[in-house]
Length: 80
Image 1: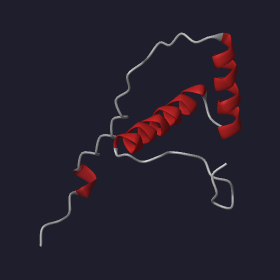
Image 2: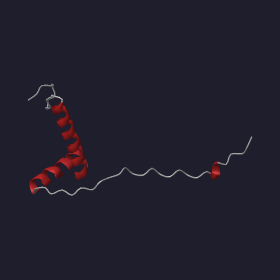
Image 3: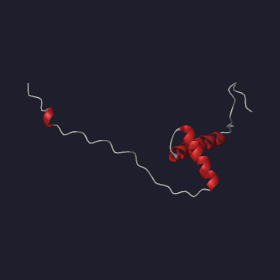
C-alpha cells in the first residue's frame, strides 16, 4: 500500500467573499434619522437595515403582482 502524502497536499484556497456592489444614496435628514433608529432597533448597521428593507419591499411587490394583500396583523392574527 502506498504511503499517504497528505503532508504534501496543497491547502485549499479560502472561499472568496460574495461579490458586493457599492451604492451611493442621497436621503433627507429625516429619512436618515429613521434609518439610524431602525438599524439600532435591529441591532445592525444602516446597510443591514437597507438590505432588509429592500428584501421586504420585494416581497410586497411580488405579493401584489400575484393579487395578494400585504398587511400587518396584531398578535391575535387580526388586521388593524
